[in-house]
Image (cartoon, rainbow, N blue to C red; front, side):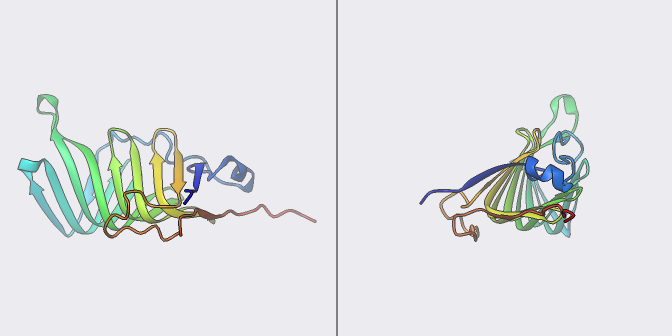
Amino acid sequence: MKRSRILLSTGALGAALLYAGAGAQVLKNHDSNAPVNFTADRIEVQDRADRVVVSGNVEVTQAGMKLNAARMTVAYRNGAGGSGVEVDRIDASGNVVVTKGNETARGNVAIYDLNSRLITMLGNVTLTQGANRLTGGRLVIDLTSGRSTVDGRASGGGAPGVSGGSGGRVSGTFTVPQRKN
């Protein structure tokens, strides 16, 4: 079956929406080097594995971006010269929501690769900005360019707990400017 793919600018949900009053690209040039702060009901530090598992109402914030989920695993490494811990990757699962400004992305699971500056969300993905909305199976957000790619199917060949929910297609609703007659 052919996979549908739509490439859009995150923030404006496409240049065509600029006229409709869509805002600037708020996820473009996100500072993935900014401190990562988190709160949760429970934390488990696994020093030998260089990771932290946080669960229960997890909220991670970084430079105005917020990531919420039921559970997250944070992979880290010790910084050069004893400069502390450097976060490399965050794996989130369970009602994952990423927000910044008026943009919201939702999905079943997400992987935030801080080094490549990419957030990949899988399963029942929804991307909204104001009244504009896209749905699909997989969303990749490039935090450098602000560009997002929505696919109709989640990758991974039916990963446990991940369903595309879109029948292999991408769908969307875009607001249209009101014109005077």
